[in-house]
Length: 109
Image (cartoon, rainbow, N blue to C red):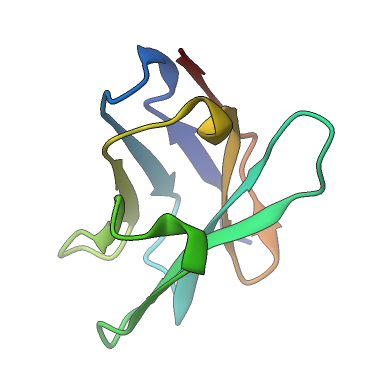
């Protein structure tokens, strides 16, 4: 079973940027996704990518985030720009039903 480890979270001011990474213990099989869980909210889907290059985003992303996959297909990135306080959340990656431990993103106003 694959193992996933997220990193790259931190504290940034509104308007700032962060790049999250999710390292998989083996190349992903078909697709991987980023989710987030904001305080007091259910976990929500952020973006997904498949090994064929297909990409999709939640409507609220509005061009601020970019998901990508490295050539080895074992690291999934989430570049986040123009961050807002409401982006404060724990961000998780998921592949074939397996979750990482998450990485905290805090955006201050």
